[in-house]
Amino acid sequence: MVNGRHKSPSYRTKTCVSTDREDWIIVEDTHEPIISRELFDEAQKAIEFRRCLRSNATTPETEAQKDIFQGLFKCADCGTSMHLHRTVNRKYYYYVCRKHHNLGKYGCSSHYMNRDKFHELVLADIRKHAQIFAEDTQRAAKELAARIGHDDEKKLAKTKTELANSRKQLASLDVKLKRAYEDNMSGKLPDHIFSMLVGNYDDEKAALQTAVREMEQRIEKARNAQADAQRFAELIQKYVSFEKLDSFMLHELIERITIWETPGMGRKRKGKEKVITIYYKFVGALQ
Image (cartoon, rainbow, N blue to C red; front, side):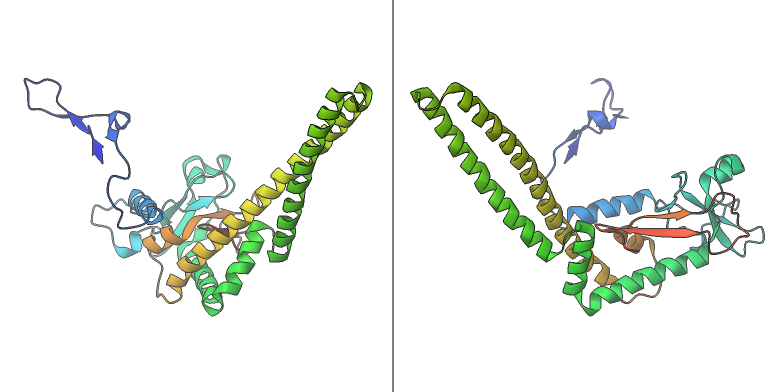
């Protein structure tokens, strides 16, 4: 719920002026959601990037003029967006690095890519992964979780066992430290022996605490990877069968797409110098 978007400069006038966003009064979670937060955020991104190809013509944009990858397709070398253009005869559409378009070769190389060829590559990649997850969802999700979490189920189980043992050792050290203090206070343990024991215990405890933190982080990463892989599995299977790409699909599925080329390679060099990487939502690059 948002209040304070407009205000009246004076009670003497009915004129309202817009206020800066930082001055708005925003209260979150006041209404029961009808869609997920993830879907809402993706919709906002789609709205933000719903722009058409720049054209000298003043007529309404056609389907061919729309850049459905607006905001998603990036130059891997300089990080700017890939800009959609069309040839003089308006027959072909192609992407070039925006920085190259503005500054020429001194800004960046062109990273030239034919639009139709680019669409084919992305469409084929989405279909391939959708088919993999449709054929055996659980197996594909497990393999993906292991890849992005860097641990399979056996390694994860071993880490959990090691974590439990390390926590037991920490508890045992605390008992030993308490006993050493009591013996020293009662005179049973000389001071120089006490100091040596405490130093050893502290070193061992510090090493165990570091190991415990690392194992906890590894387990948490694996859990997050499993959740992300499952979310991606549910998402990608929505597109097992589709005819063509559209903006909503791309912004729902893909975080970004990058294109890299060997420096000095231009639009007349085909294929080998171009490297396109698709980063999917939740799981990143799957190549």
